[in-house]
Amino acid sequence: MSEEKSRPPQDRPWESGWAPDTTRAPGTRRLWLAGALALATVTACVTAITVMNRESAEPTPQAAEPTTLSSSAPGGLISFATPSEGGSAKPGAGRAHPSPTPASSAPSASPSPEPRTTAPEPPKASTAPSKRPKPPSSPGISIRAVNFPDRYWRVRDGYVRLDQIGSGSEQREDATFRRVAGLSDSSCYSFTTADGRYLRHRSFVLVANRDDGSSLFRKDATFCPRVWSPSGTLSLESVNYPGRFLRHRDFQVRLDPYEHSHQYHSDASFQIVPGLG
Image 1 (spheres, rainbow, N blue to C red):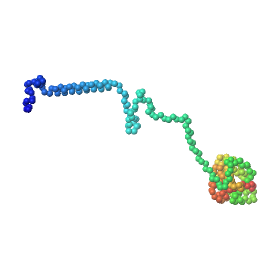
Image 2: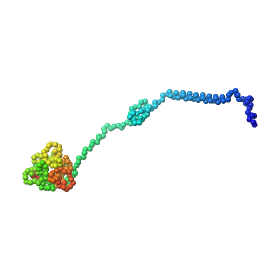
Image 3: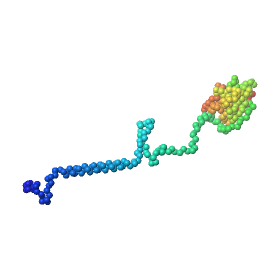
C-alpha cells in the first residue's frame, strides 16, 4: 500500500471528527511546558528562602569561642573552651583537685650523726663493764714496763720516759705518781706528779703539764685501762683518740694507734706497782 493512501487528506477531518488545528504555530505546547517548569523552580526557591529566614530568626546556642593562650605558650596554641550549662564557667572547674594534705606531716629524717670511730679491741683483752667504779686516789704508784721490768715511767725535762731508777731520792720521786679519777671520765684514770702536774699527751707524746682548765686538757689527761690478762697488766687508751694506746718506743712514752702485733702488745703493756718514792 502506498504512503499517499494511508495518510488522510489535510483538508478533511478524520473518522473521529477531529482535524488538526492548522491555525496554531508548531511548538507551542513545548513552550507551555518550559514555562510551567520555570514557574515551579521559582516557587521552590522562594519557599526555601522563607524557611531559611525563619530558622535564622530562632535563638541558637552559643558556640564555643576559641581562646588564645598567652604569648608565653609555645607555638601560639588555641584551646576551645567548653561552655558550662549555667552560663559562665567557674574558675578552676576543669582543674584536677589535689589530694588532701594530712594534718600532721611525717617528721623529716634528721641527718644521722657521724659514727664514732671505735677502737679495735686488743687481743686477749678481758671484757670490762661499760661503767667502772671511780678509782680511789692512791698515795703513790709507779708504772713499770712489762717487757722491760727494770724500767719505769719517769718525768725528765717535762717528758715521760722509760728509765732505770737508781737509789737516788730525786729519781724515785720523779717515777712516783698519784692515780686519780679521770678529769674527763671518772671511770678512767688521770695521773699527777708530786708537784701537782698532770700527765697528758701533746702531739701524741706524754708530758707533764699544769691543768689549764680547758676541756682539751681534761681529755688529753684521761686514759682508760684495758686489761690484757688476769696477771694485772694493762694498757691505757686515750679518751679523745680511741684506738690509740700509750706505749714506749725508743724508751719514749707516746700515744700510738693500735697494731695487731706482738711487739706493739709488749710495748703497750704496763703494770701498776707501789710507788718507789
